[in-house]
Amino acid sequence: MNLSSLPYFEKWFILGIFLGVIAGLTATTFYLLLHLFEDIFLFHFIGMSYPRPLGEGGTLNFIFHPGNYLLIPISTAIGGLISGIIVYTFAPEAEGHGTDAAIKAYHYFQGKVRWVVIPVKIIASAITIGSGGSAGREGPTAQFSAGVGSVIADLLHLSPEDRRRALAVGIGAGIGTIFKTPIGGAILAAEILYRRDLEPEVIYPALVASAIGYTIFGSIFGFTPVFGYYTGTFDPLRLPMYAVLGLVSGLMAILYPKTFYGVNSLFKKLRIPNHVKPAIGGLITGLIALLAPEILGTGYGWINLVEYEKFFTLYSPLIPTIILLVILPFLKILGTSFSIGSGGSGGVFAPGLFIGAYIGASVGLLFHYLFPNIVPTIAPFVIIGMMSFFAGAGKVPLSVLIMVTEMTSSLQLLPGAMIAVAISYLVSGNNTIYISQLPTRRDSPAHKAEYETPLMETVRVEKCELRDIKAYIDDKVGKAIQIMLENNFMSLPVVNYDNRFLGVVYLRDLERANSEDSLGKYITRGSPSVSLTSTLEHALEVMATNKARWVAVVDKGKLLGIVTYDGIIDAYKRELNAIKNS
Image (tube, rainbow, N blue to C red):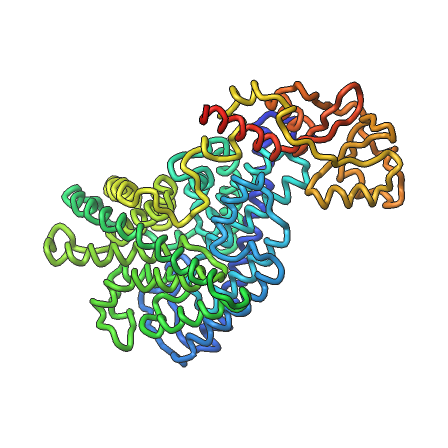
């Protein structure tokens, strides 16, 4: 069955199931590895107790035991060092928080992610977080699920457009699975790519994939929401207070990315090997954790404890509890910035939930003392704080609303949450923790042809740079494969020694052939080509038909050269600048 020939919904229903199964299995593998390294580092090496959320077997009767407390910086430094060595040796693009790398691949690399990123991201992130690094599970899950989507698209010989969609679906399915938020994960797949827009074509397959992944993961680890079940009721008198919380969250949502990328920039300037930078970041995080061990790891268990006002569980050797409650968001921002901004591997979403929860706890506690009858408990402020903070910091207001609702089963809080989210999103402006997000679809290279067709239809191929990349009919298969790999092509034009264009050979056919064979018997003849007078629009259409990033330019049967996708974009930009400057 040729998937590419199926109608959109049939094709993506099948692909959605496939991607969902893979997301469920990879998320399960990562989850088990993460707990393994937590046992090694936190429980056995340091000997400390660490709270888990209610949905993962946690309890509200948790008592903190510091264990060998002074070993915390050593643990986080060792974790950072091991992670740095793994990442920078095998897949440097796996450094950082993962989700942003996947977004960048969607916009700029036609959804391509190297397969080696998948195991590297899983292992390095599990070590970073398991050793106490301040990071989340969603970034790694997003990047390796996106990588799986990209690899599957290549194996099935899907078009670049479909590969991009598969990558985005992988992001949503991975996050929806690991957080047990299938609906929110599906919406996130469409929303996280832009600051002010959505990718609607992604939603349908992401719904299918996220549901399948969630089912697999939940069948193994249970379907209880991560933070348990919130049973409180909505009080409209608290709406103005939620608006204040939205304002505070929006301001903090500016501080988070500015701090994170400030630290990231600082580490990039350090003239030391990249392999050891995460160890330095981990060491600094560990030193911060000596003041407040709550910042270690994902912090999910600490979110649950503050939601239910278990303030006695909070621990610091120096800072009084009420002050600790207020400054924990700032300490978590610093811890995450040094853990991940230094080049460590982990996500920034879960730390965002922690930061938002403790912002909500501080604001809620203030209103509780001022209006105890209206605010008898701070739980709704903790939940809405999570939503409003990351809605602004990540520019994902719709999906974070749904995700936190799924994680807390707090549907009744949605009216207040919507007010807080809207204000936070507005106040935070264009600041985002995902710097590869683009404003709208119009700004994405993935949609250039869609929005630039009028000019594309007037500019001719003769305006493009022609490249002399080809193979001869008598060349060996091995030589043709080498040319393809050097140019990152999946196919190649073939000519005879009179330079007459004969057709195209494809990497998928040559990989199964003997490297000493002659190319002649592997040529696909009758492949479409263009002339110098063809429009750029026509050249792009032929590329799509050939499923290639180049097109042959032929005149009277002879190959003049090839035009690449990048060459077309360059020609378009030159013409556009000429129009602007005329």
